[in-house]
Image 1 (cartoon, rainbow, N blue to C red):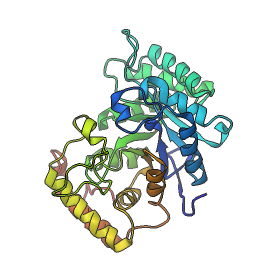
Image 2: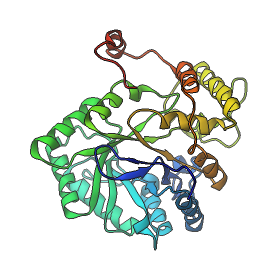
Image 3: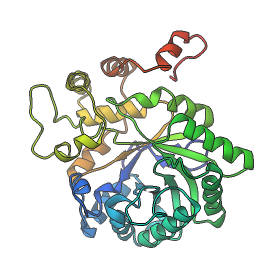
Length: 346
């Protein structure tokens, strides 16, 4: 096991998760979008990636029914065969990848259908963390939360979570669960990085107040903080940004270069790589429980695992905070003028 691997409680639950987890979106292949991530349908290669993770203490694996149209779940299930009891599996539901009016969303019908199929593809009889991949504004929240609570009572799901919710989506869902005494969300899978700090404006304070832990997807800014993208240089030949940039978060080039300059400076001080510094910065933020890492290959995975076992100094964190700071939108810029009574999370 990797020296220095840390485990944190997931939100208000008693479940401990490693601060680094593996995103199995690179398992399965199947379409151009996921192939741009370096996705593979090779089970032996996936098994080797899982071996490296387990040896390092990374026992949480995140996937979704929609990743490569279910093939990610299938490959992950086969890669974990014989050691399911040693792993935590997180998967998701809500988005469409099949035809039909009820093959999308978070209705009781679709949630039940999707969970049973995810269990079959994963080769297991329970999921440790079951996420709503997005908010369904057409299905009553009572129907959604009641269904998820039923899954927990049946033992088919251990903990429930959401992903990509706005503040009011999450708070209303928590309030409905509270009202009826149902299982509450313990985690929120969110986009958060040095070049994407909007999570801090409302979702982080909410997570702190309601004990909802953050599972961070794309912690390297949609592939922009790998250390290969710098001012005055073209995109590297091998980069998913060639095919996926338009689908992800957008930002001015100069802002990205300023953040990378800051990362370069701190990397030189610490003797670490740019990705390791970017990941370590996230691990020092409030509410963050685990960073979900993807990897094209074993080398990339092993490098990213080097983000733990050490910490940036307060001065280095402040340097990166300053380089990545942006002006918040309303009402957050207004609230920050009232910091005496409405201070941001620290």
